[in-house]
Length: 160
Image (cartoon, rainbow, N blue to C red; front, side, top):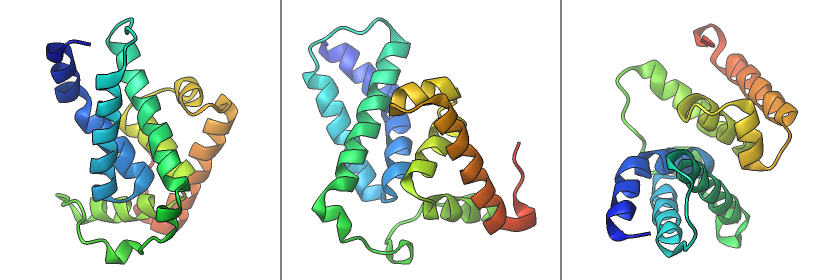
């Protein structure tokens, strides 16, 4: 990949990779590190891409796999609670912050499918391929995540 294509890919997909990493890892600092690692792997990648969609999916796959590996590492086992995180995103409305906190309190497998479905706008089949699970598993995880959010948020929850 030449420098111009790499720079264009970073500008186009950096926020997507960051969102995926943040939803998986739960820490802005870890998400920043994951973004750097994913784009470093892109820079070193010697294969060709069949188009923008292929590149986008490749980046998502590498991001998800890297984050999963990071979660398995011994360093991640010494985690701090959500309340101790020094930096949280700023939201326009208080209900957005409440939703963010509740989503981040979910297990990683639910956060990941919610992010890929709602923010990255991937279909159930695409998410299944990306995560290496059956589409029915993705559907189940989405349903369970929505149910948990509805239980925690009560009447405030609106599934659109």
